[in-house]
Image (tube, one colour):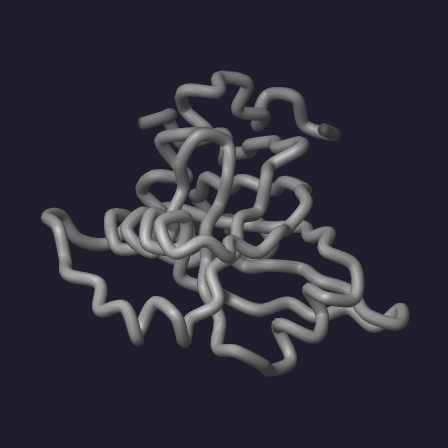
Length: 157
C-alpha cells in the first residue's frame, strides 16, 4: 500500500467494517470485459454471501470464471476545509479483496446464506419459504486476500 499510515492492519477492524457495511461491490470479468455490480450481502467466517436470480448478467459473469474482486466502504464524507478544492479530501474506511465464488445448492446451505444476508441488515429470525429459497441462487465468495484502508483523520471503530 502506497500510504502505509492509511492501512488498516487489524483483522478485527477489517471485520468490523465488513459487519457495518450495507453494500458490497463485486468486480467480475467475462471475455476480457469488466463488470462491477453492487449487491446486498452477508459476511461470516471469511466469506461474503449474496444472492441472484436464476439467470442474468451477474450469473453469466460469475459462470465465466468464478473469481471476483470486491469493495466496501464505510463512513464516506467529503471534507471541504479551506477555500481551495485541491486541499479537500474524504474521510472513509474501505476494504478491498479477492476471492473465489461458488454456488450453494443444498437447501440448508442456501437458507444459512440467506439468513446471513438478512443478519447484515436486520435482527431476528425470518421465515424462509421453501419455494422462495428454491428459486433463489445463493453464492459464497471465499475471501482469499483482503486489505483495509482509511483516511488519516479517521480512527478505527
